[in-house]
Length: 464
Image 1 (cartoon, helix red, strand yellow):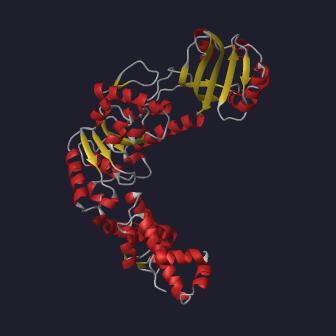
Image 2 (spheres, rainbow, N blue to C red):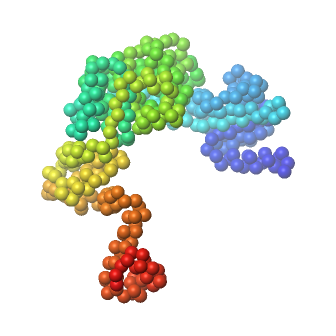
Image 3 (tube, helix red, strand yellow):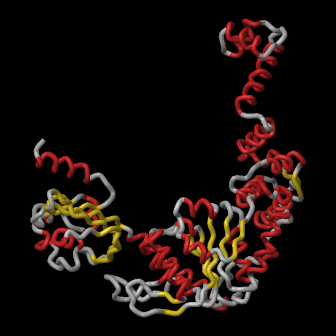
């Protein structure tokens, strides 16, 4: 196959991917410019293809163009955040990776792949504005932000009260806290309680999920941006500055990009931040509470968190037990949620039937307290205005959950093979009884061959 045919195939393939692709040959002429890149930069392909890069993009040179850097200096650029104005004057934010293609020590082409993250950038700016709004005094806000204290946390199981007692001690100082617990166990409630019952209670409490944004946006969100640091950048305080004097909750710290962890470690060591693109150091006093939905052993073993950062964050460790390990709290929590959603849905439910209570106590709650709350909320919403007892009819959306509960209960300590054999034996016995032990009719009802039924009767030693 000729080179032109290869190029034609590649051009057709690349027209159907979401990322923008721009390829220059060794002479700096564009040989591939796909539709996604065309839409991103508002340039017609016919105005770019087969033309020298420098003639089309006259404001770019080897100093400010990653494509030309790769071509001239063999310099690769990985996941670089770039802000620029397209042909229509709209600010565009992209994550670019640019690579020189080298064969026999010669650069034969350079490839740039651009992912449009303009909307995500706008979202991060919105988050910063909202966080800043939350940090303002209550008198300037139309609606009070919900705060949680230790008396909002329900539970009397020994392993859970030990965690809460330890958290109460942690609230008296400013040491970093690392909270480990499965999703839905109430890690943020504990983090808020530590803040609002501690010496920083009158200062901001700000939470950020580290898995919600890519590294390039999370860095600016945490540390802020400085005007002139890059094209389109403005002076904007990050979450560390907004939380100054208070507490910053880094939720799902195990999902923070590894490269960004080094910058976070420096902040914790030196107690100052530098905005992205900035040159001046800004002192900060922020207590860090971090959470993980994976155990410390797992995230350390799998390299999801730097050891030096982990030891900085893990001054005080709180391991929140899942709901299946604190079953004494299930009904207490369920009753609390009944009262909560009575008020919300204007209902007058007083309690639950014995069958419902038994089912709730047997279930394992993979979603933990959050799942239990959703179960009760659903049931309350299904209750009529004059009903005061929740029964199985109110849990119609949870039939599969109850079936799972029943199966788990019936299995006991048996494995699935043993359980299924026992189930098969009971079905065969019941069918034989229904057809007065007539083998032919029973086999037809079971939709198996007569010989197969006889074999199973012998296997289970069923007397006919």
